[in-house]
Length: 167
Image (cartoon, rainbow, N blue to C red):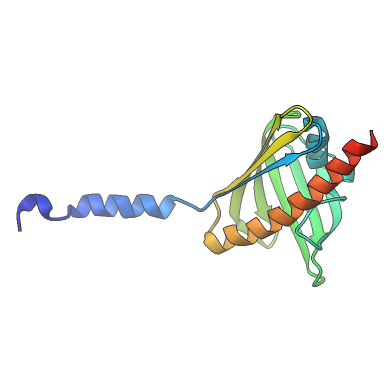
């Protein structure tokens, strides 16, 4: 076998190490019939968060937010099976009515911290919301969060659209 066709063990090890550090991520987009400021408020006002947070069928119980860089948020909700979940994080970037970036940490699994970005773009009578959740522990965790975020965004869209119609 010619020398050039043999795999370079150093290169193979480096590629494997790089692949090991790539973590799954998730991107969801929605166009919502509401203003960016209404959607932003739904993400940052505890009284609004408890009206929509959590996957389909979940009941938000409590929310706290301090939407500034370095501020914390915490939300507790109950799923239909009666299980309570508690998630919290720290805001890393806050651009009112445009962008939120925050860490994501479940009380029961603090070692699995991930990162969420919410971007809002004014599209006239609608707002495009882009949710990026990255640095998942593994693909099953990403898939569970996709289910949860999809249900939560359905509820957020219904809340913001109905609030928008009432104005």
